[in-house]
Length: 433
Image (tube, rainbow, N blue to C red):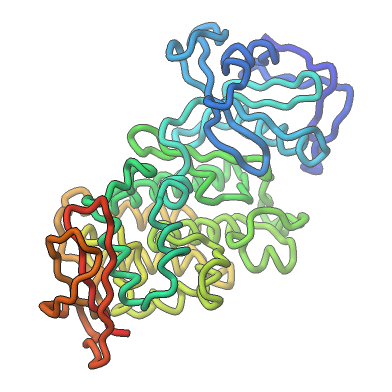
């Protein structure tokens, strides 16, 4: 039933939350005691931690699926318990914003909020457990290769860097033991469509919500890679009718925010569309929206991608090497075009999310039947390789042959070898320096 929190918040007509001695009534949500959540998570044990963000930590717990009381680990319903950092007004506001929107709206592509806890100055939220975690983890954190290549191999030639990336990301390299599954082209496109549908629902006339902080870590994936959008702490109501854009303090994550929002603080649904375009580029390129570890001209993904994706012959060089052989060049061009439209500098040139959903659905019709496509990774690549059986990390073989597309190896070729002890055989690379 409805319970009262001794100190709570209310949501007023100015879209602001206040912390008062009022009541927080939420008939659709369970109000947990801190004791219950400690029992559900085994006193917030460190081995139950699912992740960490700017808000705080998330723990896995277990509750009875009928009465929502704590139960033994591995039994009942798995949940994710988010503990917000120590109280401050912004934290309290974001905590209640999540409750406000997720209690009001239900959609198959939104994460389900089960309940919350406000006790002893601690703010907690209890969600359904989404088994595969965030898209951010799959694209970035779960990959040994991204860190390895960016920090260890930056000194070798760009061509060899790319080829090494391809080899080390192949099935022969034990990436699963070092992280998680690699997302295929078809899975990434399924994720893109699910995320687009979630945003389209939020932007609908009936709902009229702007997420404001849509990013890879906001996209959760269940066991079937179906999307559940999360991270509603910065969400706000959108403008209605002919009302001007909502003016707010600029908030969100660097690298994702639309340029007009950063410049003026004026917020519309088209700002979410820009965010979606950035996420789509991250899925296509396997790069973060903002990465200062890369060369300066590659720090901002949107700026860098726009220079390359508009040129058909460069698309294969820009897309994530893990996607090799899984897509046609025609499909890659279409998806790249959607991403570029969504990240248009001017909001009026961006599509709305319903249009994005329609475009992705049209493309998806042919994705399910596409397997073993001709690889497109080697456009513009000039590299040679020979696999040699040996226990020695370096061999002076010259029996190498150029492979790749439009760039021919120069006369001054550099012979380099990289030895990986977990490979069945050593690899000999020859690349244009």
